[in-house]
Picture 1 (cartoon, rainbow, N blue to C red):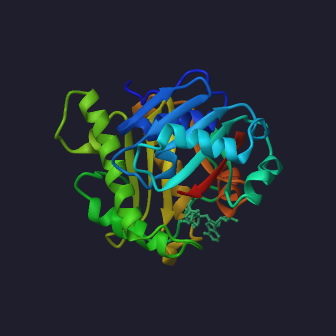
Picture 2 (spheres, rainbow, N blue to C red):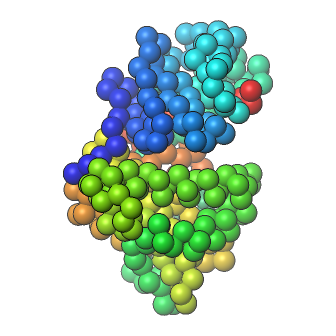
Length: 287
Ligand SMILES: CC(C)(COP(=O)(O)OP(=O)(O)OC[C@H]1O[C@@H](n2cnc3c(N)ncnc32)[C@H](O)[C@@H]1OP(=O)(O)O)[C@@H](O)C(=O)NCCC(=O)NCCS
């Protein structure tokens, strides 16, 4: 089965998966200090244009980290400095010197599920909900409408431009699978590198998510339920259904995702059976 390539030697499952995913349409380079990921088509995607450094945040001063980033990205068009540390056990308190210098903390967790059936906690979603695989190449506008509605309700929305880019990027990643399978140009529904999934109510797409094979594991992406359809069990039902389909079709036994530590989303996933498998610690700053 085709899968996106992840770098060897990265200890943190979350950064390993992120580097594989984000470099799928860009480049990944191993350096003496760690790994450099570049995604030229999206200069404002921080995780597509980042350094992941070996060791703990305390190993270098904020000034030394900024200089290192500049050494590696000074000649590249990027809008943010983004640096992660490949130290799965480090805690966010080690970022204090960076916060004091105006950096924003990245304190995310990688959650993993190993098994066949995610726990939805209930059987019926109520109403007439249809769960199915979407063809992101053909149904782009319907997925976009749902993702824009999800984004508009975020505390800090990414904005329509970023959401459009993200959907276009997802389409392109699925097409990597088509190319690997020798079917370039054909609809992406049959892509063997991943799949997009949706829940429909009265013909409207009200929840979407993607599962991509990264380093042989499923990687969950872009999970969202339209704000007017939340808390009805649609998100959990879609995720459980999508995982059954993707695990069988893509031959996956582990599903991984990255989310904010201790946020509402982490609670949602843990209730379904996901467990922590390490942290993604890093910093961000506009350049
Ligand atoms: C996270 C998200 C996808 C959940 O979607 P959803 O369709 O509301 O999911 P569900 O209805 O299955 O479950 C959500 C909650 O409703 C509860 N719930 C589910 N079905 C219910 C029902 N029939 N009656 C009452 N409550 C229900 C669940 O227990 C769950 O509670 P929790 O938040 O305390 O864990 C949605 O809130 C969302 O889009 N959030 C913004 C984007 C986001 O954070 N995405 C994840 C990024 S990693």
